[in-house]
Length: 218
Ligand code: HEC
Ligand code: HEC
Image: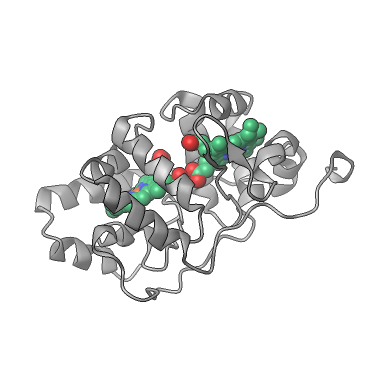
């Protein structure tokens, strides 16, 4: 929020053109109306989701990696991710099927519910940001808490999920143009270092833990 991003980008020697592209992309998203979700309704329709997202340590099969933590995430980002699965910008088959059942309003509501209380940036790095992550922190934060609502926080996210997500941007299973650009140049070793760094940060995202059964949904 205090222009850290611009400084590290310049240090990293990014061309002015590349910075202009990000800034434009960031502005376009920033101007979309913020989702005004009704968390109560979101909770009422989240029963199926909790079968995976409400179980600590639950894994995706084939390939095997952890189901992402959603609590503490930015609601605008969660909504954007759900639109991505629904519209085919993200290739995950089960999440596509799940998101297809949701209207735009359902997406806003469910994003508000799962986000809970979004993490608040501390503005401080935990130790030294690894070289491979110096560009990344300009959006995702030195403490792994995103600097703006349309970016995901990465702090405490499952390490194997972060590896998977970055690999998907590299290989095209996820088509977001900004992240495709940043992931394209990463080597496996960079991804390993980056995932280890962000997954170890606190305050951390968490698995949805608020008590919930269909009986309490209303
Ligand atoms: C069968 C298990 C399963 C169910 C049910 C499920 N999810 Fe997911 N969800 C996943 C997995 C696995 C991923 C990671 C997919 C990927 O690799 O992109 C994911 C990803 C997500 C993401 C993206 C998170 C991020 O950090 O980008 C959101 C948001 C999400 N799910 C919300 C939901 C909602 C809302 C529902 C219910 C309507 C739901 N999920 C149902 C397994 C599930
Ligand atoms: C200009 C801002 C920006 C920069 C710089 C940036 N990202 Fe991102 N990142 C985003 C946005 C926006 C998304 C959401 C994309 C989508 O909808 O799939 C994202 C998504 C991600 C995700 C997926 C999170 C999830 O929960 O699924 C990971 C992991 C990630 N970025 C890591 C990185 C890494 C590593 C770098 C540096 C090499 C980086 N990002 C640089 C904006 C940025």
